[in-house]
Length: 99
Image (cartoon, rainbow, N blue to C red; front, top):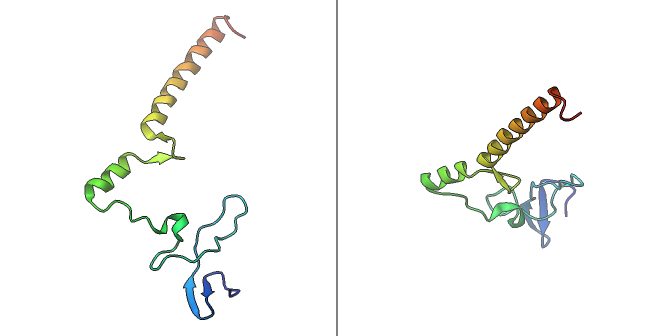
């Protein structure tokens, strides 16, 4: 392996670019070779082709998730309920039902 972080020497003479993904914990760069024509390795999404049609891209945009668990609609619904809960709690404090 060369000292350069952008290329890796495989099998003595083949130079390939290095995966640009970084670890969340250590901040270190992935040590695998990137896929041909991509910036990341197979593990970090280099094999993904993504949506190809305009309909597929639109579906992907609408279904965009945060941390893979919740959509924007779910988050906005929860925010509205929490605002309602805080308002009820403030009213209860004002009339002395809770401290």
